[in-house]
Image (cartoon, rainbow, N blue to C red; front, side, top):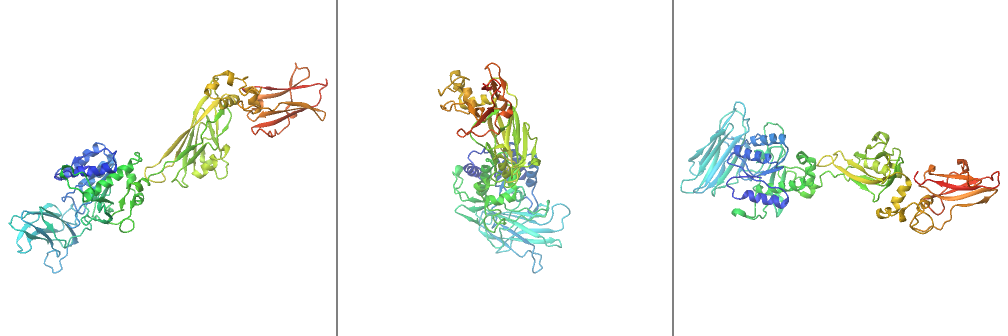
Length: 621
């Protein structure tokens, strides 16, 4: 915050408004000093302290009325070093301002409109005039400023040249009585009639008459700089109307640069209560009260995404949606974009993609692909059909994304498929179509050392590439926890027993029987049973059917084909493996247990007239 000298505790009042809007914001204050140079130094000091938003209500009539000011250019230079946001009061000069092309209807050399100010004894009137001609180069015109007693037409003062294209009068009424002072402009030289701009500053009881004054084009100085938010005032009790004293736009310039800035930028409320510290008046009126409201809204919104760039807040397409429109539809030179509103501005931030995970802990087996479709979902509320960049990263395995799902991702959208890091660039609808099917996303663990399983966190990061809103690219990240096992049996054990039970071999050991159904844990795994639920099915079943020896048994779908063998013997000592064609294929589903196959082995009678069948099973294959 930069505050003006001699304004009591106005800086405190402005800081109170910001604190009320954004209570967690760090507040800094610097006095503006007595001139433009001191003011520029104050802004630079706040910038050096790292302030991200600098607000002021300071103006200098020495600044050019038709060109950008030195402070405005300094603001641009500071933004090159580190970008920040500048908020400034547009000014309270609506009835103190005159702007018009020099008009001399009767040819006497005098500007036709006369500006009148009532000046009591001891009253003060300062008058500042400039004309629309570049300050650089050789002057083409000369306009003189005069102040007369309107009743006696006695000269009260004449202009003093303070800059190449302007004059100033400082007058104090020491006549002993009140008078009406008249401001006159005379064209001393120059063939072209230039635009004249005058600001009146009555003090100590002096009051201007409204004849010839206008609020239009009364913004000047650094609030007119394109990268400064100039704020006009609306009464908090009637926020749809501009305050009668509030300066209005545009800011007509002749350069440099030649681009005409859109001014003002926003409207803010005044007429608000403050503490009155230091005897400062409350309620607080003026654009000095409106500007910190805008600064507070910006601070509050920026806190939603501290990583957003200052430049993001200057994009008119977003700012127009962050304001309550006032006056003419869209931007106008009375209210700017309208009243900046915190909730609307927050809504213009780019929403981060969301990576959703299904609750649970997938168990994976080394070298085998585990289907993870349905475990991960990617969405983005404001991305629409814009592509998201989704990166799957594993530390102990490989990832594969399906490329043939209808409506899903295609090969050209996937990089490094089947490796430890896969990158997919696709719309959220394509991603959701792929990730929604069982084999849309798969994971295969690398070798797992003996002992405890290896914990894995599959990182899924989605970046929206900054296609919408303030804040630039946003990333949503989640980690899907996995557990990698040496074999399917170990995965089954960790699925059915908790950490304490796994340490107790009486409960979770290979030959343990926690449900008392005489099926050991190894056999429960083999038949697709539950070690905690008694199973009354008798397996296998053997006998002769149609002249052949038949054995039927239940086998879990978790069993790897090479983890078991069916063997035949005639003497219970010498065993040979049943050839694959003697096992009925395809394996049908078990009619009762959904996670099991119904296996059947048939053999013709052997040469000795008797044969024995058995199942040889290695649970840790």
